[in-house]
Length: 234
Ligand SMILES: *[C@@H]1O[C@H](CO)[C@@H](O)[C@H](O)[C@H]1NC(C)=O
Ligand SMILES: *[C@@H]1O[C@H](CO)[C@@H](O)[C@H](O)[C@H]1NC(C)=O
Ligand SMILES: *[C@@H]1O[C@H](CO)[C@@H](O)[C@H](O)[C@H]1NC(C)=O
Ligand SMILES: *[C@@H]1O[C@H](CO)[C@@H](O)[C@H](O)[C@H]1NC(C)=O
Ligand SMILES: *[C@@H]1O[C@H](CO)[C@@H](O)[C@H](O)[C@H]1NC(C)=O
Ligand SMILES: *[C@@H]1O[C@H](CO)[C@@H](O)[C@H](O)[C@H]1NC(C)=O
Image 1 (tube, rainbow, N blue to C red):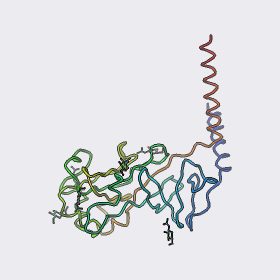
Image 2: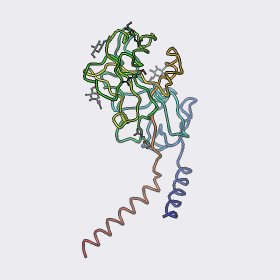
Image 3: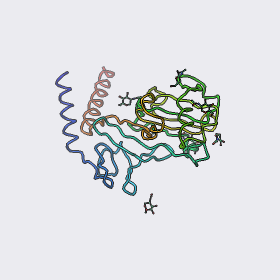
Image 4: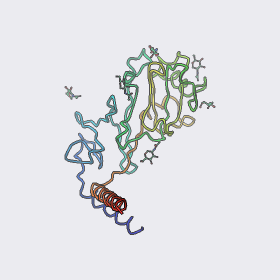
């Protein structure tokens, strides 16, 4: 068993050494397995390099990538802006907010504090904090960014991590019309005027399965199937 593990570990090392890392996008390095082209990276980890900036595509939209931390397989995307300063609607409301493609190996980490604004009573369910003291009121009251949301009665705050937020930050006409997201926000220790410096949504990618490994695994599956077939025949 231990030998088998070691074998797969070595296989992974070899595969990663052989895999081609993509060239930088502008001056931003693109670490493996992220892939900006057909001939580099791992195709399951497709992102785009547009005008020397990296972009992350969701089901319905695209968001700029503001940082990448390969050591922890994390990247941060910039959430959509408000439609205008007078509006408590973010531009991705028609797209229903951020919806990660289920088929891709990315999810939302548990480090994000999400504020949902201009909500209807439809959203009044745990674990959202929609009380008058909720951080979303503090933020909307104290900043110009979300000022248009300040007078609206219902907003909610929560920290990501549950399965419901693993692949989406959902907004909709009959729910909440805008959101803000902050990475590793420490609301008690940071003045509200500085929260915007933490704006972003942190995502994580799963480690790739090297192609040699998948080849071996599918060969094993084939063998299993053959064995089953043999057994059935007997
Ligand atoms: C790329 O930049 C050029 C020049 O600034 C601009 O005209 C073009 O619209 C940009 N393309 C995209 C896809 O943003
Ligand atoms: C609040 O949301 C509703 C429904 O999505 C929208 O029509 C309205 O303009 C929003 N309010 C503000 C101040 O943006
Ligand atoms: C994408 O946007 C369309 C409307 O533009 C909407 O009908 C659809 O449900 C959205 N997809 C998701 C996954 O929310
Ligand atoms: C909601 O958040 C506020 C501010 O962080 C906190 O004081 C309050 O206890 C929370 N309420 C609930 C029900 O979690
Ligand atoms: C936000 O402002 C409203 C209206 O001025 C006020 O009633 C409310 O107490 C404030 N809430 C917080 C959390 O600062
Ligand atoms: C996200 O994916 C990582 C790596 O696959 C996993 O360890 C983590 O539990 C996932 N997080 C959530 C909230 O699903």
